[in-house]
Length: 79
Image 1: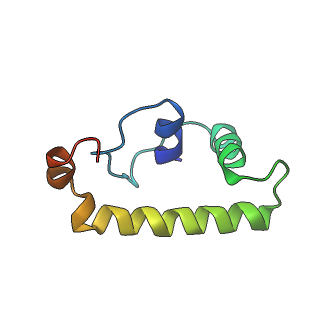
Image 2: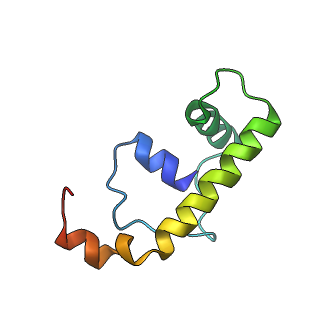
């Protein structure tokens, strides 16, 4: 939700890192955001679960990647 809500507000995500201790928004906000980005107009709980698991997996990989570190991103702005 932290990534998607910032993406929706068109914030720069280049240096953002997920913080599991930070609570943002309400349960309703989170659910509405997930449904919006899920890609299905009326997703089931299974579809939302699969979407969130896949997104979390990809974001964790991105955060750990040497190619996506803030230092590298600053060198290649707009790439």
